[in-house]
Length: 97
Image (cartoon, rainbow, N blue to C red; front, side):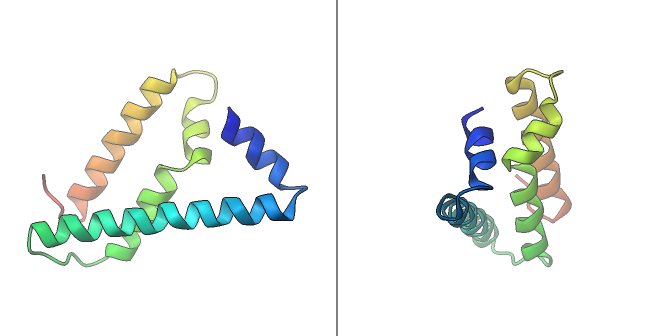
């Protein structure tokens, strides 16, 4: 709820909007680092790593979460769906657990 309100408020506040963009880019970099570490641990450099990071970034974002929730699902159920999608994405890109 708080992120939704902040996102709405950012449309009228350039400084807040910039802060949110920076926050999202930190999240994208963190995902990139995690995917890179997973690949290094398995001694692999899977093709499409940038695409994988972009997709993980999208499915773990607030907007995606709210679209899945859409008044029908409990937040815990949405989290489970996102975790399942992330796991399947990692597997599809060659990152087997």
